[in-house]
Length: 187
Length: 187
DNA sequence: ATCCGCATGTAACCCGTTACATGATTCT
DNA sequence: AGAATCATGTAACGGGTTACATGCGGAT
Image (cartoon, rainbow over the protein chains, first blue to last red):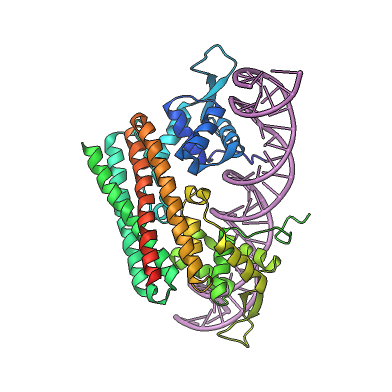
């Protein structure tokens, strides 16, 4: 069988990495994690306990997360989850994977999730490199979109063309943001 | 059983609607559809034939799509898929569903997919209304993000705060785009 | 004749979604 | 005491992803 997270090459989904990223800062209980997803903009990456509790279980089964006494209430019965050595390694590996063009094509969400968790987990040089690479990949992809648009836009219906423009502008905004983020890092 | 698309209340997934939108313009074969997803920016909404062919099958099972002789080659053995009356109705209903705040929170992708297919399927007034509603929902959501940021940003690590800014800027770009799209429609 | 790209799928697996279940606390 | 909310789950289902299967038409 082995249809679960205990297999050798298993890697978390983006939701799993998001949880791992929270636990990398400090331990939380399952409920606290589910509240963070429900109450903060992190909610984009999930919905409802129905996905979060199983995701935690999978991380635990894979040995990336372990139970620990709750930090606010050490003698209490509540247990929280903490990231393990192995979990920290897997998490860091994820943060450091190179930015590919497919990542950019598939949307910026996961890339931004990775970036958001870099402070405190990666040295500044690596963070900066990520941003430089990201900016470049965005620009390359944007150019390919523009080139495609030159050929295809005339045949598009009006709202199709406008939606296409929206995509291009969105990527340009991301590229400008990356440039400013690099400056902010350099301060 | 009835574990399939033949049940009464069944509705397509976004991928299904994307296919329906293509067929709303004119018939295509399965392969042509898969090529469109592979070769154009529509590919964001899918990957590989492994999702597309089953999606077409489900649309067919639900009676939203039917086989038809290929338009370029009417006597050939190749058959293409065409949207049915029922499919057109379901598709139009989807295009016309009100813009909710959850739609905006979950990301603009599906909203933009809907918008892209509106030309030729909805009257200009409905398209305009969609954009006005969308712009308003984006602005409301952006304000709530900004308010959240006022409270939470000081506690965020640097890259977390920067990623958060990226989200806000992205939504602002979308709002500006919507404003310009309304102008473009009014010409 | 064979080889490669066209064209159309199918099967297994995993995970996110939805909906429900249940005990413990806290409020009224 | 009863109601809401806290806190933690589980079961069923559908569909996307990955990987594989296969037959056909044209090129060499």
